[in-house]
Amino acid sequence: MADGFGNVRLVFPPVVALSGDLIEHRDMSALGGSVSPVSMATTEQFGDGQAYPPRTKAHTLNTIYEIAQKFDPWELHDFQRECTKHGLNGVHKPWWRDYALTDPSIFCVPDLLHTVYKFFWDHLVKAAQIAVGTTELDRRFATLHRRIGHPHLRRVSEAKQMTGRMYREIMRTMIVVLHGAVTPGFMRAMRSILDYFLLAQSPRHTPHSLARMTLYLRKFHENKQAIMDAGGRGTLGHWQIPKLELLVNMVPSILSSGALPQWSCDRVERLLRTEAKFPFTSRSNRQRIGHGAQCAQHLDRVEKMRLFCLYTLFRSHGVELIDRLPDPAALESSEVADDDGASGVVETATVVDSFDVTRSWVLRALPETDAERYLHGPRPTHNLFVTGTISVASEVAFHINRKPDAVLRIDEAATIYQIADFRAALADYVHGLDLDSRGGSRQHLGLHNNISFDSVRAWQKYRIQLRSVQTPGLYMDPETLMAFPPGSDHPLGMCDTVLVDSLRADGQPRSCAPVHEGHAMEQSYDTTTVLEIPEHFWLNDMWDREIHDAIFTHYG
Image 1 (cartoon, helix red, strand yellow):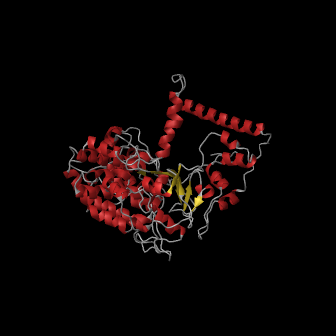
Image 2 (cartoon, helix red, strand yellow; image 1 turned 90 degrees about the vertical axis):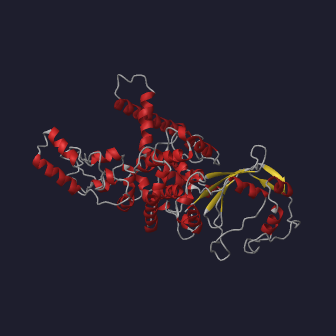
Image 3 (tube, rainbow, N blue to C red; image 1 turned 180 degrees about the vertical axis):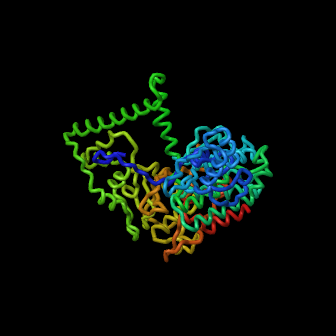
């Protein structure tokens, strides 16, 4: 690598992690196809759930050295045959042999895409199709509640070109789909491994979360025989799966390399489609120009068009091309949110700066001109904590349209939404009565209490945004929630489930909140027997409360 003075220097960056599938990890570790790249486990030991010693750099090099003492490495046939007996691929000089602070058992990090998602799709989904039936499983997935902004598969058996988001959506709904169609042991095994997968995707871990991961994996191995008894393994009578052995090494990998999502190949695999497959298929001269040169030309022309668009944008407004970005140190300090109970609101410009430098440049150089709308590229997530209504504790932000979907009289709204005590609840709210003041039951001021207004505005959709549980200074993506009343299109209504963290007057959370009985609630519980928990609920410490243990015990 050449420095600023033109001097060529040898640079050896540290190898922290190697993202790839199992085959790539074996090739990089100079191993064959019957061993694990990170442990001493062999094919016969892949499915027993035991943790084996790591396959260290010294062990592999010593094995290669011992074989080289008996067979000449350049006698490829004899050397390759002997290496195969010891689980090696025949490479006698691995690239990492003299690389300082490098060990294949450490930098071969399990990949979420090729380890978790592929194992789930190739083995667990197939087991569910065998146990439940392909047609019945598709029917159950098709009848699930649809949420705006989330993928919904009508036929899981025919799904192709799956994305990581679709894999996660199926993981979160698999337990709901299997309810009542499999044995308790099958459900315990499936629930344990799915809890393990969902927790492994957390962006931040604690000793408690890692202990729970170990517990879930052990519960899966204790109950995996039930999947085999139901025919979930098909004609195979074993669990000797290489990906299953890699799951045992996820917790040690997290301890040494950090959270797994940062090493996932999801985004790299997507770049293959956008930067390699699309440029190659969109041109006609595929024979004259090589694939690599064609992709390089495509990227070069896209960059030229982007720079030309930026230049014409500045020239059309009569502004010189002067970089007006603030000092990087000031920008970094402004991105840190307060953790002392302040509102935690991040300025809009700061959110944009951290997302797209070019867009922030245009915002500062051409203020109040909407010039950034002419730029093509990724856009920052809309921050409802700046433009919406914030809760008292500054944990939730809401946004509704300026124009309501309907203006209804109170009694009419109570009839449409099937809320018998709607007027009484409004009276309690107007007079400042909460759950503690009402005694936690249906005690209210009366159905005919005067509340000084007789009509309400109703919205059928609204947006909500939460703060990240792992990082208080960051925010989750906004969600669009539905609240359609019962009607001709939706006889039982179309409403999303929201879990509310209710607090008492002393600031402590309530153990449970009262649920009013009624015709609408009875219909809802008749059609929905298992609670479907949203993504952000799985990835924080709240799911470890008594309600989760009660549900888990229910299946066991």
